[in-house]
Image (tube, rainbow, N blue to C red; front, side):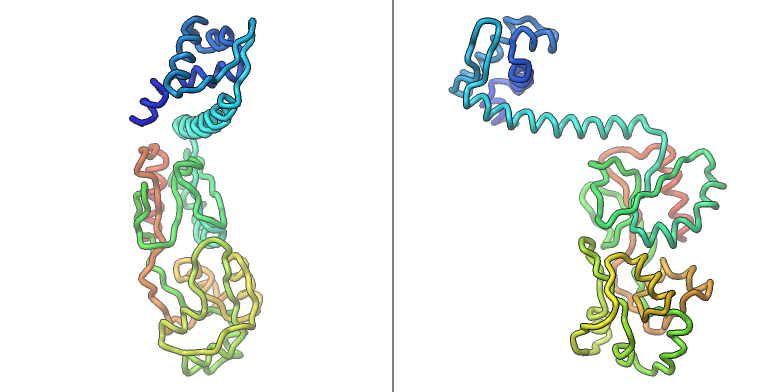
Length: 300
C-alpha cells in the first residue's frame, strides 16, 4: 500500500480516475463524487504527474483516454468491481436473517436431513438453508455461515470443531454381504465387486489406500462401479452393486435401519476428521452461533 501511495500520489486519485474515465467527463465525475470539476482536474493532473504519463486527451466538454489511460482503466475497473462484489457479500451477511450450512450431498442427505425435524423443534425461528457442493467453498467470499470439511482441523481464517473422527469400514447391502460370507480375511474383500468414489475436486481416500493401511498388497483395482459423488455410492451400495466405503458418521443410520451392513471389525481410523467450520474473520450471527452449538451437541 505504501508503494501504491507513492506511485499514485494518493489511492483516492484512482477513484477519481475511474469515475472520470467511465463518465468521459471531469464535470460528470465531479457530480458523481460530489466534488467540483476543478478538484477532479487537479486530482487527475497529480495522478498523471506521479505516474509520469498522460491519461486523458482533453477536449471541449469531453475527455478521452490515451493508450496508457485505457490500460490503467481496465485494471482499476476490474479491481474496483472485485472490491464492490466483496463489499456486497459482506453487507448481505450483516443484513440477512438466515443461516447457511455448506456440506457434501451425502452429509446433507444422510446426516443432516434426518435431524432437521429435531433442529426445527429446538429452534423454530431459525431459517437454516443447506447448500451442497462438490468442492470446499470460500466461506467468507461466498457468505457461508457454517460448513463441514474433512481434514486435520486447521484452515486459514477459520475456526473449527471436530464433529466426527474419520472411520471407514466396508459396507454393502444385506444380500451382498450374505453372498460374500464367509469373509475370513480382509484380502478376500479385493475379490468382491467394489464401488469406487472418485470425486473430481475433494480429496478422498480410495480402496488402494484402505488396503495399504492394513499392509495388504493387492493388484491394481481396475474393475467395479466408479461414481463421483458419495451419495450416489451409497445408493449403489443399497441397490446391491457391491461393497463401498462406509464413513461411520454418515452410514450409521442406514446400518441401524438394516439398509446396509458393515464389516466394522475392519474399521480404518485414518487420523483425519470431519469438522464444523466457520470464519474467524467475522463474528457469527446469533442464529448461526445457536445452529453451531446445536450441531455440536447433535454430533456428540
